[in-house]
Length: 411
Image (cartoon, rainbow, N blue to C red; front, side, top):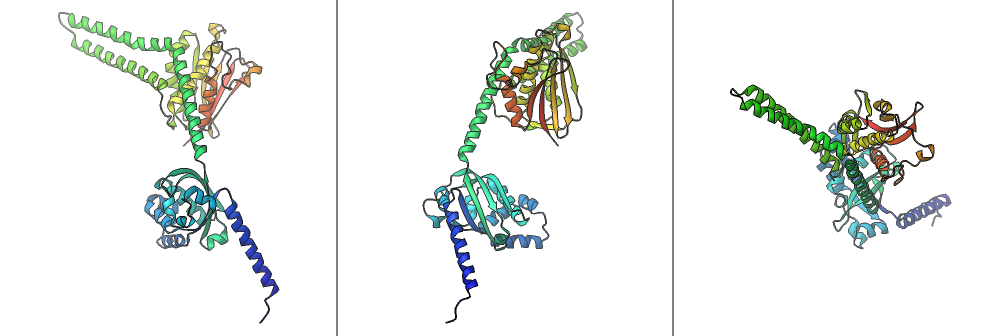
């Protein structure tokens, strides 16, 4: 019997040892690992190319059934013990089935993106998504896929899954707590502005009463002036709408609802907030200057939350100038576009910020006011950072303080 080549024998032993280490590692990892056979998917994609489809991303988005079919033909070859514990019911063989059962419809785009990453030569892909266990439970997961060229060429794919349900729930609870604090701060702020709100509502109500009385007088004349009464009635309608708009703004600020991000005009938000504060500015003899750059990109944020930031920073500036001579109280609200961010400045002519306190201004429950909650500025920071922005403060060389909000612009 011929003896085996020592070099060939050594190579086979090295291969067996490598496979042994791989299997041990595959089973020992704390994360869920899957080995998939997606050879049929490659055939489906080649057929698409023959049909002239070059943009897989658009095709997948327009044909969700095709994405589901790719899942159905992707077969689970092997899973580790952690996968059995996370997805199964104790029987590993039960998990070796087509992949689509583990993917709810809402996660189609993540699977499609992973396929695109694989065929475009990306080394790996990762995304948070939702996956389904055999018992039907859907949970939040971090999905990762590794595209080693030799494995992809052989139609094999290694994916990993980490259960992040607790982390997602913790983030949701944190957002809820932040929303509760923000709501409490808005209600507190509206309490401070009660006199201004009452004044703002009383103006259209007084105008309604005046115009209604005038209308009655015109009707009581020997020859009623119908045209004049019609004009007065139109004014009454306009003032009633104005009062309703004021009440709606207050209701929005005081309302407790889930924030909804939208592309907003920052200038529009500032102008609405300043209308809301008109009486407050007048009552404190503060001269307001709006230096709003036109043509700004929109910012992605919740309108009520962004108004809360603007009102809070403006009110802080007004209160900071309480000891400033009345004829020197000036508030400049400025917007401008810098690079890829939209900048919002509040410049006051108050005494400025004590350097020892400046670093603590955005800490929760830290306040320089005798009756303050110490939550206004921290909530402003939380709101701004939620939308990818930043807030800061500095003392101006000419006196006073400047609070700056930076938010990423959007197309």
